[in-house]
Length: 120
Image (cartoon, rainbow, N blue to C red; front, top):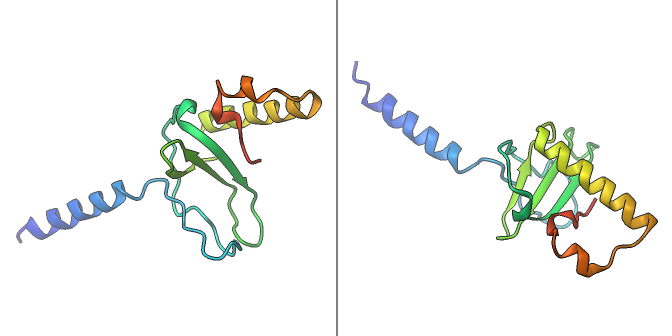
């Protein structure tokens, strides 16, 4: 038995999986009737490269909690909600949002940390 077809299939599989890590589905008509994330990314993403974070609770549209980070280069990445670094970022964002409600922060001071401007 020749191992060449198996090796080719394995290489094709690995190449396809490398490109699908943490992808978000495109929005079709504004209504979310399904999960937005087809896979999640658990490796650390430096906060300074994150422009925005969206949190989608589980519900009739999707059984999963979804966290979609928009990077400064425009890419949307679905991150793993249980990853320790994601939890730390969410905790910081929630604390910052709570502080903003209690005492608004000037836009000038927020420019130093753009990843805190979350849509939570």
